[in-house]
Image 1 (cartoon, helix red, strand yellow):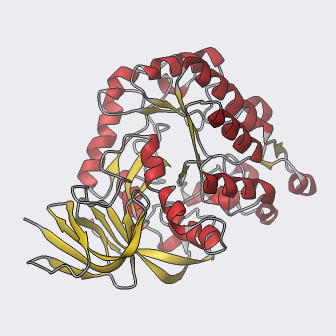
Image 2 (cartoon, rainbow, N blue to C red):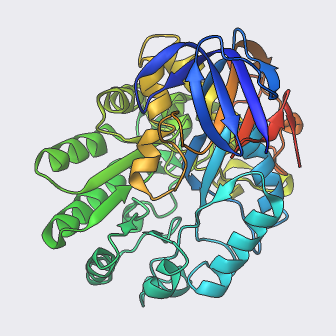
Image 3 (tube, rainbow, N blue to C red):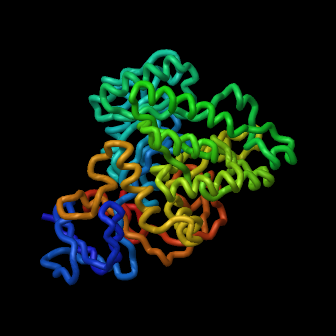
Length: 432
């Protein structure tokens, strides 16, 4: 029998609203007791005085690149970055090579996740075979492996009939469809957000309508068939309003926003640093403010990283040739605390909810993101709220280094991450 006692930490549980200093006893991978002055009773004692204890983070949108893109990232390096960032559950996207559109590919991802053992993986299946947008993938075969979310992320399902069929098919499993929110006819050759900055720089603009048109169509289709729709990487204030209206009408819609769309504006593109190139693009201060308000009031349900690593030889090119994508797993919570909580845009428990209970409510990530109470799996993160650190891409655990927060000074860092009571991060070091 394994026993662990987390002693004297501030237990922050967005699932129950608990916020108080307490001791937390863990027995055989599950929470056994929460209270004051608990005795060791043979348990290993971990001093958590001055630290925060909360549920392990859940990421709905991660690119681990395996299979096929291991030069950028693989499940081992991505899982290490996740553990270092306080995550215990990841949802790797389907746009691998081969695409995760069949049981054999999904089984490979699940097996590799178990072998690495640093985080639980809940893969996203493709909507269409090969993500070509022409023929639906085998939802049933994938669902039998526990997959309850489908996306051709990176490629929008442009055919409305295919999208409607996907939504109808998904209702048989109460599964979620998440469509890459971009009308690609409006973004041909686009390089950044369309607006004042793109005009000054002379770069082809990416209009916010490209996101909003696709989201509006999908909301209408989802409402018509009673399906569950999840809107990924919201970046536009117009999209926020569409989701708010749809929720009020009873549409079964959830949404996510990334740390970079909550903190970085298109003005940074003036540097021509390709670390700031992302899909959807960084937008305006007004869009950032709208996303922050939507996150605070629950219109947006989750913070998702859209962690998208690229090899340096690909990312370190001239702006127009560099691929879109940013690292986020290891910096996400610190960015949220530094840029949103400390300035008062969102309170701490709400921020934690958007990284735990919120994403857990979108997908069936069993044992993750729920309340810290007796019987619950001990999937936890212990955070030093006073840690001050400067982001350096070369020091992160990812195989890539394309962080948009290079040189940024951040507050807070995970000290320990526990997966069913086992340390995946201990004293700031990943336990492989």
